[in-house]
Image 1 (spheres, rainbow, N blue to C red):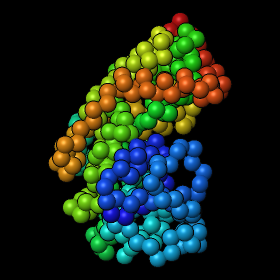
Image 2 (tube, helix red, strand yellow; image 1 turned 180 degrees about the vertical axis):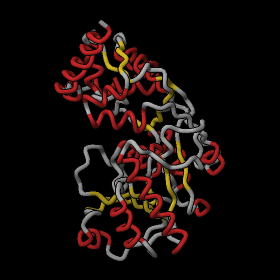
Image 3 (cartoon, helix red, strand yellow; image 1 turned 30 degrees about the vertical axis):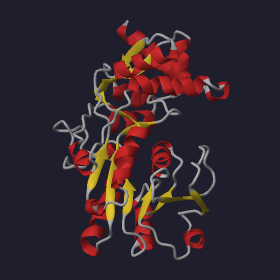
Amino acid sequence: MRVLFIGGTGIISSGCAKRLVREPGVKLTFLTRGKADRTIPEGVEVVRGDVRDPASLGAALGSRTFDAVVDWIAFTTAHVQADIDFWSGRTAQYLFISSASAYQTPPARLPVTESTPLRNPFWQYSRDKIACEELLIRAYREHGFPCTIVRPSHTYDCRSLPVHGGYTVIDRMRRGKPVVVHGDGSSLWVLTHHDDFAKGMNGLIGNPHVLGEAFHITSDELLTWNQIHALLATAAGAEAKLVHVPSSTIAGYDHDWGDSLLGDKTHSMIFDNSKIKRVVPGFAATIPYAAGARETLAWYDADPARRVVDGATDALMDRIIAAQARAAG
């Protein structure tokens, strides 16, 4: 099976590539501009080209065809339309990486299933993904374009921390400083290790029975944001001193941080993974976040150069926390 990854060295795609390239009978190719900072797995064919440049794309791939194409870096309808134009007749399956943040926000009912409506009035990123999905489904219905839609939720690897500011939060904990947690920290969240995500994703690649359908792939472990911070603190050998701040207040200080909260993390999200489990027998996420947090902190602690503190985020947290203290007065 000939599989092309457009991208392939990101947080999610790297886990899928690492697993897929070991599968017998699979030939995996990356289309990349060559700017990745993650190691490309041995056995992957690398083709240099820019998917955003039609001339570069044509020169890189010529008339080659693939059994499955996964575009990990399509974010707008312009990106997807270009893919439809280029890949029509050249692949048996096109997999689009959407986002679970496209689901109705806040959700009217839990758990979320693939039939939950798509609507996010808070976050442009999510609205763009919804528009991409609508374009693809229309192409499937009208022209038979062989698309499959995948909606990851919060997926991480050893390099990624699930908190705003990344390692800055860990640094604050290790210095005994408080950190900001949105709301009262009790909303439920799901964190999925990229190795677990790959088990479900790779079962969709090359599967002729999933065309025209959408799937989310997540862990079944539910964590509050208070628990997430506590697990990170434990892995860091520190104490989690939490200051709870309304998401709307945080948005008043930092628009991007606010969008990511109001459009996603503020609301409890519980996912029903029955559909992916039916299609990919044996799929189960088996890595708890307690283990994932230890893996991530071990990666940061292995090299001082990785422990980068964002001074602006550090100062912003100080301002927010000071304002909360004055308001509590």
